[in-house]
Image 1 (cartoon, rainbow, N blue to C red):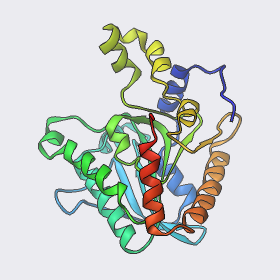
Image 2: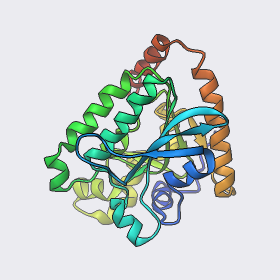
Image 3: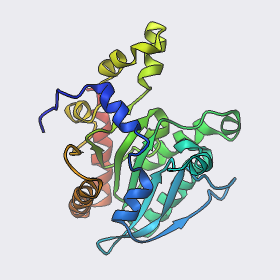
Image 4: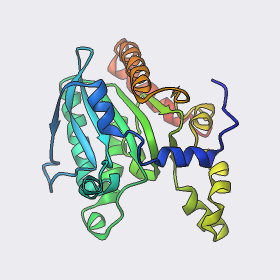
Length: 263
């Protein structure tokens, strides 16, 4: 897919952050049939920033884990503006382990500026929860497809990003740090965020070029429903491909996928 040079990296960041951009809940509603949400991490509580549950995609049973920021101010406060806490990541891992037990593929929908960094989250082991997900997902014996639908920020996004197939919407971004944070560190000036975005190489086209992701879902000139339909079609194709692999083959390919990044 040719890179669309007319749109700058920072313009894509702004598109990914757009308050009207659909997040995880939209894709669940429009792709997953008979979805049943499951709550709680069985350790501390529930986290509304991550929606997790089971359903069907064209009669295939799946586990879906989605980051969601909400639409109204009340819902965004309830969902902590889409910034998950440790119990959110632990809930996600609990559902992934359940999916492995029942041989269900896992779909992760990523869209968060990053994990919540408040003191209460740190007290409950935010870093450990993210690290545990990375470790466990690498060895999960069921297919995982991760889709970046908005802003994928730092370890908070990577905690759902270990997968067999990584997909990004065209105007989504995926980065270790926000452009503003990077500009502040490098140049002591957050106003240079646009320059930082260009250097971070965080767009879908950059990451496809680097081999970090396998697929871009085009957005330009398409409605949200059309984007959703194309994503659903690709997920079904990938499920078919991944289902042909043995568990050992799948884990070997997953390992090699991440080992080759940056090589």
